[in-house]
Structures are given as C-alpha cells and as structure tokens.
Length: 187
Image (cartoon, rainbow, N blue to C red; front, side):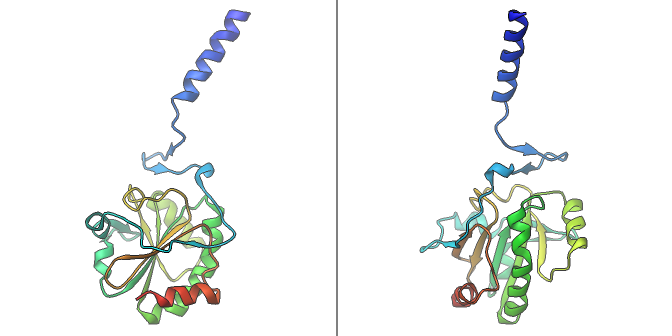
C-alpha cells in the first residue's frame, strides 16, 4: 500500500512540475490563467513612456475580426488606445461599457480604440455578437509579448507619432472625467 501511494505521489508531483502555469487553447495560442490577472482599484499610469523596442511594436501585426492585418504604424497621426483583454477576464469585460462610452466621446478627437485578445477569432466574434460596442476588436496571436503584457487588462496609449505615451494596468472607469482628461492630454 505504501509503495502504491508513493508511486501516485511521485507521478502527481512530476505531472504538476511539468506545467508552467500557462494554458493553451485548442489551437495552441497561449492563454493567460486567471491567477495572472490583476485587478486594481486605482488606475496606475506610468510617469514615463514604456521602454519598448520601437521598431518591434509599431509593426507587430494584429488581425481584425474580418481577417485584415493591421499594425500600430497604420494609425500614425491618430492617438491609439490598445487594450489587452480576454473573454474570461471579468475585470476586462467589466471595463468595456465605460470604454465604449469613452470611445463615443473621444472618437471625434482623433482617437482609435483597439481591444486585443489572444483567443480564437470565433470566440471573440461570439463575445462581440452578444454585446454592442463601437470600438474595434482585434486578434493578437502572440502579440502580448512584444508589448510586455504581464497582466490583463492592460492598456497602452499611443500618441500621434506612434510612441507609447501611457501604460495603464487593471480595470479602468474609462468614462470618468479624470481619465478622459488624461487621454485628451496625449498629443
């Protein structure tokens, strides 16, 4: 009996140690586990622009839900809000109504809002059909990595030159006056 229990424990330990904590979808795209999601009560904006490889992130390809390729560099001359999210992430989904209100308010002010998920397009489409938001949803295959996304929701704000002006982590109330003021201040 003791030998049997020891074999089961060793096998279980071996199997657990082989898992790196990241799960994969059926199509092998990485998916963050809920333990990696951090929700904050207060928005946390970096004081300085994030040091990203400028050549790398501007031309990182994303796919729209109608299968068109887009890049941040396609929006030069516009301010871009790039939000990383997932359908299973409650804080991500919870901030979307206020994000949509902010988009409605800022869309005439040279702003583009992009919501990037690394889930399958069919799953993103299913989500977008159940809600009615006016901003653009995009597919990010492995594009979380070049943007150094450690937690979701995470949002990068790009200025009109395509430079990262602000990084925000956690769920935001995007339609609050103070956040709208910060977004409008981005040149």
